[in-house]
Amino acid sequence: MSKSLNDAIRALETAVAELNEYAKSGDPILLRDTAEKGWLAVSKAVEALLRARGIDARTYRERRDTLSRLGLDYLRDRYAAKEKFLHIDCFYDGLYDEDFVRRKLDKVREIIDEIRELIPRQ
Image (cartoon, rainbow, N blue to C red; front, side):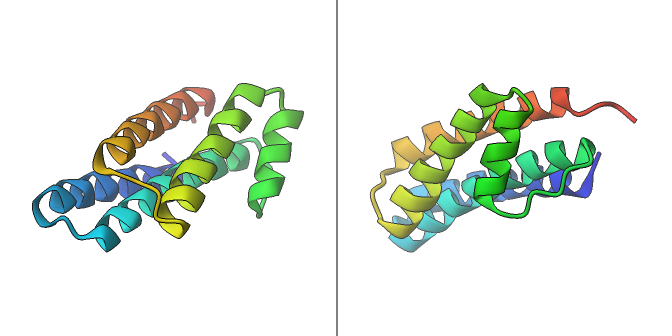
């Protein structure tokens, strides 16, 4: 498994642990950090997929555009949605609650699993 995909899984595991800690503490900074780690997990998973195909897309926009060029519009849309909900709305704007973030992390896990299947086995 690639370093980027390992990083994605580790970021998601850390996000889930932080979300559980938030449930005990109620610290809003912790919930924002949880959302950002969820976004990191998606971003690293997409990076892993593109690198497995020999593509080095460095910016979020390059990644979105490349997913479209590869015919993976459904994945581009999911990637962009997680950027909006987790990175912008939750982390930057503070528009969140525990249940919302938990549901989004479930979707992050689904995306990672999908991407894992799209990466050729070596």
